[in-house]
Length: 273
Length: 99
Image 1 (cartoon, each protein chain N blue to C red):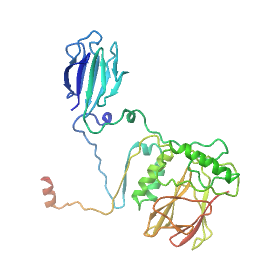
Image 2: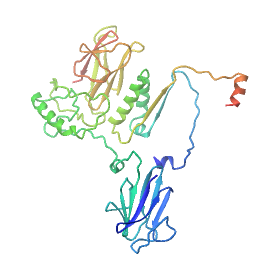
Image 3: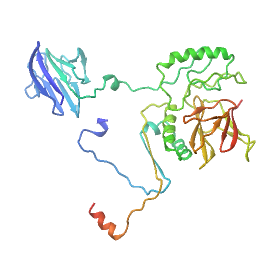
Image 4: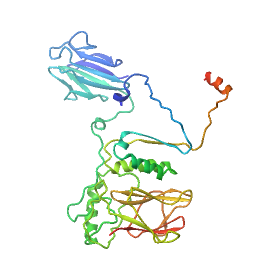
């Protein structure tokens, strides 16, 4: 149970338990905590207690209410907070084990998209391997610079964001689609089937999810995301291989001309020119 | 949360009944999901990845984040694996009065 210790000029006057939903403070006698002082308004403040949490609210008092020296309108009380009303102090005690910090309640966490670099129209963190670069040496320098800058405030994009792939030189040195932005601004890609009955067929990867393989035997999904295309195993005792290596449990980003083998069929992933 | 649930010790739950068929997948989610991605995409994801519910949930959350992720996202998926009969005999109905 939370409580308040009321004191003035260093002298403790009384202890009050916060066992009601609404505990009022003020000069008038009807208040739960009556503070008899000219600097205190008739109805000065109220403390709302819900389960184990207490909030103090100033009731438009003349001189205001301070908590830890700062004037407040509403404040979520933390253990050892000191409320000041007029010349009186009330220290708040709440020995509940879990104490959230006020910062947790003030800010909604924002997932930041990685900033685009200004220098060489290169993407920020999470560069897709389709990043066309005029000089791969230049891109490596820019990207490693951005990594250290954005690493600290970058929120993870969810599962499957791979470690930074080595920049791959691709044929056209065209300006990039801004891969750092959400939305369908992605380089187009497709799968070409190389073996089996459907050999020669091309499947455009226009949808956000394209499943490949044989349902009930081996299925993988290619997801289309702002920063590229990723392949993830969906079902089947065996996992598909990418360029000969067995796909792990997590999503893997697909690079231009990667060779996928699934359910006995070979196919190639490629970015469209 | 105190604003949505209120401060009474008990809450009234809202219940709905649906006829359940084998293979059905139920999705319970916060509006952090369906405010960010279209219903068609949710449907496509459920169908494409229905053999792997963990992956389906991860994919839904990731898609909502990729689309901006402006709110917290909660996703719960329930798949009906096989039928379950409801006792309909006279005896079963009498017994159910005592439950």
